[in-house]
Length: 418
Ligand code: HAM
Image 1 (cartoon, rainbow, N blue to C red):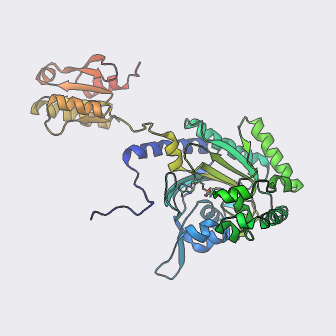
Image 2 (image 1 turned 60 degrees about the vertical axis):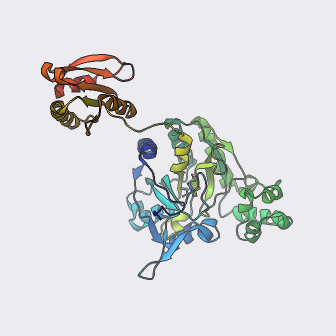
Image 3 (image 1 turned 180 degrees about the vertical axis):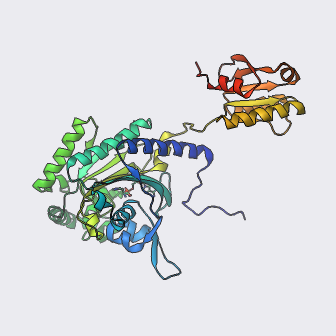
């Protein structure tokens, strides 16, 4: 039997990867405009890093990590997300010593052992950005503005931004206690997972997809009503700046993130177009993470988007490049000239195609159509003798007589189209 890829791991074929490149290039352009520089960190880290950052009582650490013992008896894990590794690198290389305000972005594969479905895979790709060193709500608003601009630049009106605040170590314990006692009276209605973690991680019940849990949590206490003065002011100012910059958002006080490191602002870019995988991008503030990992007390905020989900939203839009010119030839003698021209034009930076198999003229023209070539030309004996040929612009059939020289053709192909 032929071998296939591992379940939940996908090949990205050329047409799809053109869409991916468009997403990646747009992200690079927008992020770099905001002063972010790229960081590349390994796909594998010591397991302890994820336990200490994402949290032992999260689904990711409890159930979804690709963890194994390597030949040196070390427990290592394929990264389930990017923030932990980036912050590990930030601390390890003392990037904060040059400037605690670092703006870093990254892209690459992440791994979570989840049940695969549309928009959810075991190897998936994130593009993320992290900004450290600023507690001011201005940083939150700027990161959200950048994310919103990315989606606008890529041409998507979906998804929309939802924000929340999860408070801080000062006010969250009281909120957890309030939620815990609310859930205690409804334990019978909760799913097994939510029941089990109602003590360690009661917030998860708020975004559990099981209908019984959704029902049981109607009327649950809102985190926003339990914020301390500092967190409340911070959240109000984030909203103020979002409004000032014209960034549309709505508040979702039931938004709970699946990672433990968040403090204060959290957010998701959500869509109704991808079924249950509604979050296209998500993130938040993590003011305690860097010190928790052994670094100095420096705050941070960031997000990551799922590239597969952004690509799904872009649908079938074609971003693949097509040839500038297809050269069709009638006989062996003309093929020598065509080959020389093709070589010169490739060196000038144009994408050129010709027939390699001595196919009929009709089938060569079919191929020019299929490849969506911008121009085509047929070179026969007359053209070789006369030194020029009629170049056809494929989208409207307009013909231009042009010398069969590299310079002549370069001039034609460089002319901006009407
Ligand atoms: P996250 O919400 O776990 O956050 O993931 C961010 C995004 O990655 C999701 O919104 C989704 O688009 C995509 N994603 C997650 N899991 C899968 C999957 N199995 N298949 C396809 N796409 C998926 C984080 O990872 C945080 N590190 C984000 C962050 C950065 N927070 C602060 N800085």
